[in-house]
Length: 107
Image 1 (cartoon, rainbow, N blue to C red):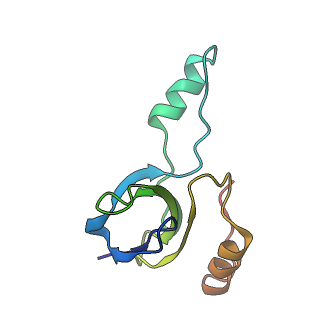
Image 2 (spheres, rainbow, N blue to C red):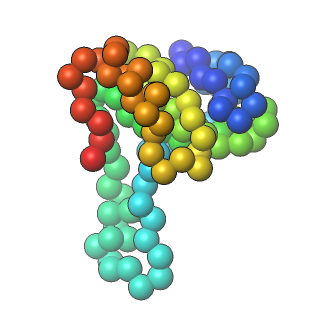
């Protein structure tokens, strides 16, 4: 079972207290976008074997959204950060690199 820490309120709990919201840092397209861009946004998701950035909501707590970096193979959680961030913080990327030498971030 995953143990997550809510970035907003600081509570650490099992994943049953949270709700997964899918991939983090998706580029959303507005009115006037092409059908291909909209289709990619709706249906195309990364499904990496390894480090992945996800959105989570503290459903049984403060109700806030936040992002989590975790390994999809080992379920190791590297950390959480604000949902308003456009990219993972450098500190978190360094922590991942320390634990997974040679890891390259998402494009």
